[in-house]
Image (cartoon, rainbow over the protein chains, first blue to last red):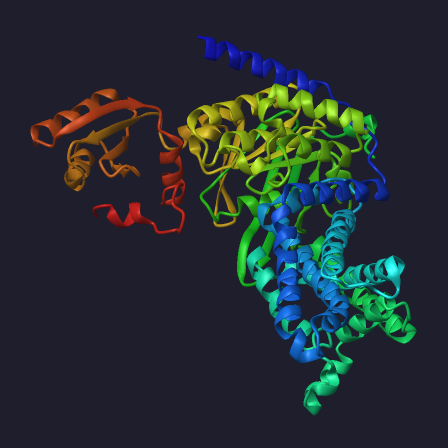
Length: 276
Length: 334
């Protein structure tokens, strides 16, 4: 009897709730994108594991490489730390970009995307809004590495300003790269597949760069590849900013590559997303 | 935007003619006509893979039909997709909520995306959580919710702004009977407030309970249409249902009943079978035949044919099949 009574109250409340609404004017493009940005921030807070996953690996590499190889590669651990820290910063933030694709794929597989696509909103809003949450993740991943470096004794000649400039450059580059993983996120079947494919690409590319070793020590063909690898260029640019002696060519090339990636993969992402 | 004036012009919530969709070589929907009046619950009934979800996805502007035309509340689903989106909402299998957010955050998110200001979106979220009995769990992440709670958040998310047409895609699949009844009550409440519902289901009981009209679809086509009563009448006015003690004796029972009453239909339950029969006296003769042959009867009843039987009569196979194996037919004695 009491169950029936409480169900009746439910129904009354549901009827009241249904009757209560008048349709508000639909939100503008920017407002919708910002709302998705808010969603991205909430996810950073509710799913800290994702951030942990991507920062633990670079932290581990930083510690391992510095203390295990530092002495033999560069003569001393502090010398080597100076060399690899800006590179590990690049690695840490670039690894995080894979999660842009993972998050997008998760939305697809759970059906949330269908709900968003059935709303009368600006269609690319969910994609652009996600960038905001991504930015927070990139900045945290980069900051963790810089702070750890300082704790281990790294003192950039460019000072705090140089470190921040390097972080900003890497984050901007990541905006471009993240669309590559977004495309993967829209094409592959499961979040795990995106994660695997993403790391299968980004992991060797990061190692076949000048992040950990001077290209001059490598055999010819490998050296040639490492020299043109955009991740090397980005690491060189980040190193130069942290050293307080900006290498404008590398910076310009890094930004150019990011712009080119965005120019190709952002429209592709939007197209695949809208037509999915 | 839709104004009152152009709403008044249409009394049809859905008007689809010959909509079709193929994915590669697979034809998911082979040309479906649907006419759904405003204010009705219209059931689309069919087994998994019959094309129900693809039909909804076309009507909800998620995919474009390869052929045919459809209007939703007077707006073309392709040419005026945005206007359609402003009037509908989706829930059930195909539209979900964000599991990494709390129930309240999900509702606030939808409210904001639909144009509510921050304070109004929060107030609306709290009102819905309260009405759907999930106020206490409002601050928990949805991934920690039970199936019933999840579904209620899902439906709440679909009525943050009351839609004029709501697509309910298998809204009670996987729910316990109590949660299922709650979902049904919510659907009835929505219609009482003037909304229209397109309900896709593979549960015949659900369509029988809720729908004013039903389209039965199979392999991408509408194979029958009408009210639940009309569909039942199309396979006869009454039916004898028998449950045997020993499932192994079902073929024998089917033969005996066929002689005494008429052709028997084998139910999904391996011990059960039914015979369409308008005449109660002949049904009684059938029971007497079984008793005389020593076929143990666990239970028997006579009543309206179930929609299961309707489906079987229309398609030759049962509705609950998932992989299309027509087991009932193969088992049937010749």
